[in-house]
Image (cartoon, rainbow, N blue to C red):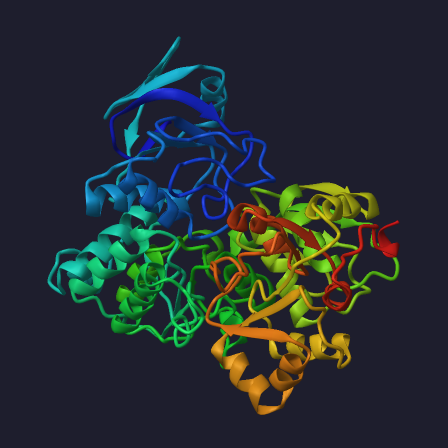
Length: 558
């Protein structure tokens, strides 16, 4: 039956997207226009439309982008999904609940969904969806199936304060939409909404802080939008730097650790196998589930704080054993003599081939990927798939026995990887900027870059920037790695990552960017407005010296 998840009246033209879309990096928050250069609907406006897509994908920050669109009057009139969806749903829920700017959210059965995609327009009421020749009764979402503990009910009835009540109401609504029957304790949280993607992020955080919100479990923070200590000396305009810092400070005021990294798994004491956590930030979620064997749903921005305030999360999705199984096998015909570029290319391809389900990759058993290779794999996978994890046979801890009954099989090889490489490479061979650190570079990656540069200095006119977390910055300062990088002309920037960087830290004069990150190769064109090229770490290091990127396929892809 058709489910009305977030109620609101809506009428307008139908825009049916053939595939999911990440609102972060995929939608201009000021205009509601699709800016994802890899999406078939790039350039189209979503404003005022009944937007259909199978489900969303990509960044957890999409909820904040939708909230901003609702606040500035550029939101879709409604979002209609075929599969379960959390990220945009949460943004729509809070737009109505906190700011009286509701956006209707529906989930339809596949046959109903397919029938609606062929129609030009529709109307949504509190009880029905009406379109030409189609009338669907909408079942309102109910949280009555949730079995709540006495402590849960105490938070829900307001006895622990209005802000905790709001947090628990939001958790229960999202739990109901996910089909959960109860909540579970989580041991730690990671906040993604501290990036100043739009004024909506700050309005939400300040509202919660003003209500007296305090986290009750250990809570780390994602990369933010400025170098917290140095943005003024870097020339960042105060009209951006001040609200970006205020946003970070609001979460610190609420008790979060000022970790400022998109790679929380690089911090001391990462989550353990089987540990139930509540992380947002897509690459971190995929890495935690896939590589560490911890358990976390891909929590949307703002729900992460709600969970941190209560210590409770809906028991759904990959918190449960049954939902961690692979429903698709991707057999990889592995090219010989590959380099580190394999892993981001493969992650992006695996996500494209498995956009709505967890895959198991076979054919990589003879490889010996480093933690950084797996980091690159997971980050790129998170840009093209809605799934919160993947399995790699012979490598990741839950790959054995991870296959669900009836899983289908796809194959991919050299030609498919070459096609991804070509899609990642656009623009002039002359590069103005080398972008490292999406996600944040590890200590080992910084040392590897020193080795690849071999003491040489970057070419004048080609800037090189590495973004890191404060913990890695401390480590590379202690062992001399940062000095070696700086002697080669490399700029090291903490706190920011490439998905949150802005001018003038991002060099305004740079027109073509080269990166070794599959995540940034995907999001970079839309976020920066520049042409982006991709290569291995060594390719990028050589381009830093010569000022030119190779335009030829790597030998291992020919």
